[in-house]
Image 1 (cartoon, rainbow, N blue to C red):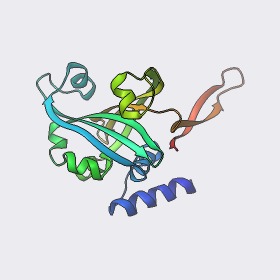
Image 2: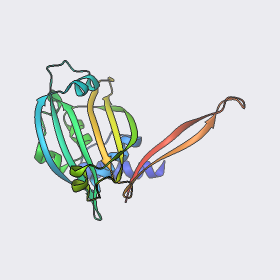
Image 3: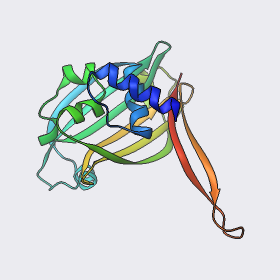
Image 4: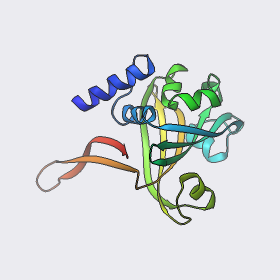
Length: 195
């Protein structure tokens, strides 16, 4: 609890605003403050079919697609692609994405971030990704898909991230609950650590 409080204070001081993010989302903002980002591209386009479905948008809806590489002092950490509905992303572009974590920009655009659904899998680096992340072609990468919802449970951002596993790890604390014959594991705390 104390660590989360410190992270919340750090995020608040770094952004100069009241931070409202908790748990994993707060941790991701803190990570954004402690790493550098290079914005590769930002474009406004009609949402691809899978993006429109994830964000629950009509087929003709416009979205902002942004690609960034985030780095630690040791080098590249992740390649992130985000899609945000056009109405929300109107207030920020390439310059703002280079300066602040996108969750902070969403909040500054009036979004009250509520929850996230996240899937983690693995993928091999292709030629382009190997160059972005400074790894060999065919290297194993952590593949993250994260759908962010606002407090009204509307999707506000879809993220695809590829992370170097030697510089990023995902931790989950599990506890057993239930009767003796039906104990299950449930997660209590989530954190994303990078090094």
